[in-house]
Length: 86
Image (cartoon, rainbow, N blue to C red; front, side):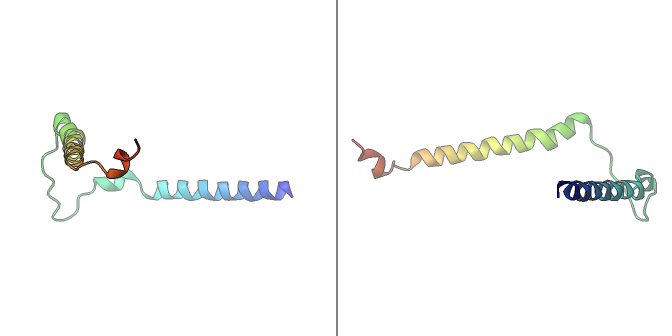
């Protein structure tokens, strides 16, 4: 019974690998070099602009939101359940 499971696993793996290979071959990056009608790309971003846009701005937003949550959470009075433990 174990060899049947192995054969099915090998068959499924081969099918997945073959499907992946066919998808990679059919979606060749060379097709992206042809320009479409009306395609008008803007100027590219520098490395610093890319880092700022995709790393620094999201980190800054995270810090601001986390800070607001902490400040607003501390401004609420503590619950009575924690003070009644003594």
